[in-house]
Length: 105
Picture 1 (cartoon, helix red, strand yellow):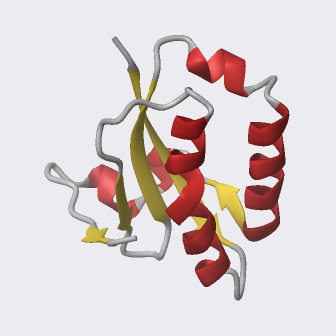
Picture 2: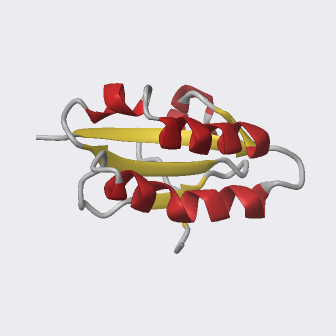
């Protein structure tokens, strides 16, 4: 059994395309390392431009990821192009049925 995660990334000014490119390869890289499951990942955009990603970690893999050099390097790249945003800061979090713009990567 895995663990679903929802993460929100606010692109830094001028960095949305770089963020989308990182996100395009993010879950694939985690799968290659045996950390993410084959469950399809979802990527979407909030009304205020935050990129939201949903994917599934293998059970316990999040702890492994925090010590894996390849994952840490990937997260350093994310830190250059975005800030992480708590879900409750998204305008959609106040809606009964939160709606987002789908992104096909």
